[in-house]
Image (tube, rainbow, N blue to C red; front, side):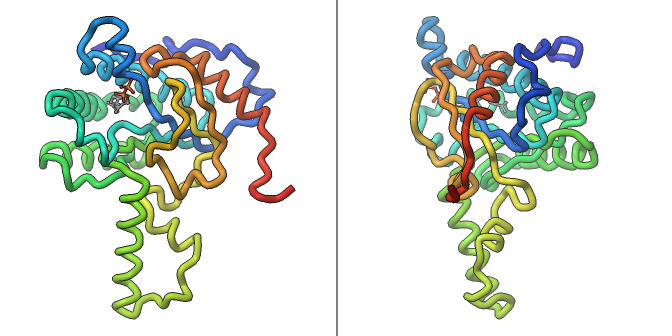
Length: 250
Ligand code: FPP
């Protein structure tokens, strides 16, 4: 499988030094199925192309100085898809995990997997653990790959944890604050996303980073994920810079 090396990363189409870069970018990698359908290919071909786009954009984001990137690879609701598509996604994920042990090393990217990994095979769980362990001391961008992730599911896990701590007397109900809830999420210790990009034109969150996106800027783009290029990432950054973020103030 072709790996993108640093030297292959194109230069930005906009003057990034004039932009206020978001610290944390989330991406809903949508449109793989439509991309494949347009070409008369099976949906799995769209996911294969989408996985390549992921590699390319993660590397680009890291190269231009984004500190955190979270990509939505498989949701808690995606299990409803036909078995053949789920198997194709699991195969792609396994390929990536095998490759990830060496891929991204040159880019110093730290890999993390967010979501309920108990639903995956022992082999995949071990590979995720191994990827996290091997990359944890790198000093580059943190790349969260959301797998079997759902914002509602994440909050249910957090509320269960907090309830247990209350039951054991470790916490009292008055201790429940926004910070405490954040500390019980998969993204514990990370800043909330400033910008969430959704290619493929759909206007919904699809259960992605529900708590963390309270004040994220959404940029919806009319392009299917496998076609997404570095220049599209630049355009999203430019659009983000046009936004006036008030966080509820004036
Ligand atoms: C949504 O498009 C995409 C997914 C459910 C899967 C995303 C997965 C990848 C990009 C590849 C795996 C990534 C890694 C980290 C190796 P869709 O299938 O819903 O497209 P559609 O809306 O056009 O049908």
